[in-house]
Image 1 (tube, one colour):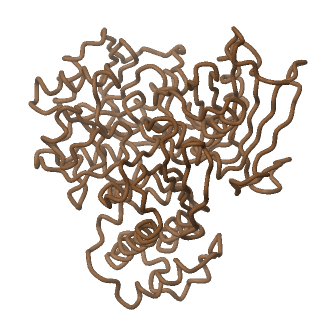
Image 2 (cartoon, rainbow, N blue to C red):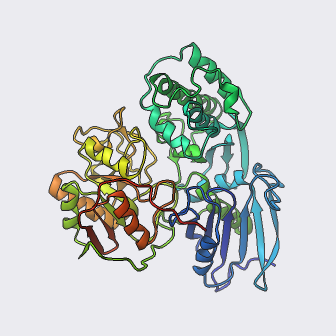
Image 3 (spheres, helix red, strand yellow):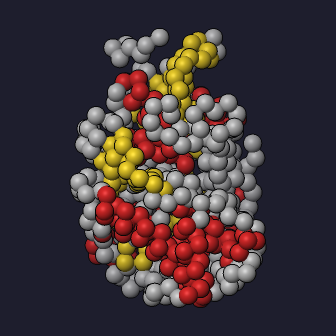
Length: 535
């Protein structure tokens, strides 16, 4: 059974990412376009959830026919009946066959997890088809460079380090008395703490641990094996530990940079994928190496983008094309279920009214259209606030039930970026560090003077653009605080009843859903982790 590119019917591939960060993605092969990418954690399920029946039913219901291709990403050997596993890019790292779905024969395609990262970053990148690229996959397990030529042939350029992401996460667990092992949420916390570290060369204790971590291929590292380390359960905010964190972070990056400088000399653009692609400081440093003509990181660089990558790989196999059109707001649509409006004032959305509320130090939930793909809130499932006060930063962390050392990100009008931040490069997916130039932005300035700003244009997100424009008209500054709208430990809120429950429990002053502005009367200012959904 062969695909028929000339068929009048749109050909579809539906792709599944097993394991944590479970995701289902669908592509229209005829148009080479992403239809959706539905992540299992979205709709207030626990973070890093595996695929659940709710996600499967939602994803299947969005297609009008059984897809032509079912694609499944590889995972760890022994996971179900995985024919391909986690690693591999060469011949034999994919599997092709047929399956029967509801009485109809369809193509079946599976390829390794490693390939899902590679083809996801390639397929989503803005570079023209047939442009050669370098690719870096660095995550919990992989730490490798590749070269993709104009014929889509892939050459493995070398493994720099085993388990770079896990080494990074392990460091936080080592210092945290409450942690028995590294957890999925630890890398983001460590990235925040690195900013508290002092510059300087590693001392003897730091050098010993850096040398041990970088050389070790053991994963997971048993924390108890390092119980004699001076950093064991020292506390994550201890100055001695934050110094170490900064220097380990530098050492990991320097290892990859040294390899790239020696071996990647053709000046091609660089594609970055894997969970380490969410490290904004490392991404900024890759730009500044000047080794590459450009650098691209997808918003779903972590495993939430793997289903897209496997779908692109399947499309490449059957059609020879590996480039897709896509939109970052391709997640689940918002569910407008029934809510109890007691204690709510409901107004038609007026951007000036919301801007005035924000300028009056109100904290507002902001929901528009479909949710974002990837882990960063980019203006469709956000909590917004004025950016001027440290008190606002503290309140937002209380609302989010997060540690006080965690920074709050800004969102900025793209045309005003250079007025407030040092990197005048659009950053629509909040993946780059910038130095803050405007001393008024106290709520979004981290301890080291940086922020990970999202930029917004009218074309990219017209609703958020209008709000920022209205806020600028009243305050003189087109910048707001932007943090994710979610119960603590859960994915984005995606239904009205959950949003209202969160607003009342966590202390939001109001929220916007599409074209309606809801204000809470006498909203409490106490934080709560709220409720999570269960499959």
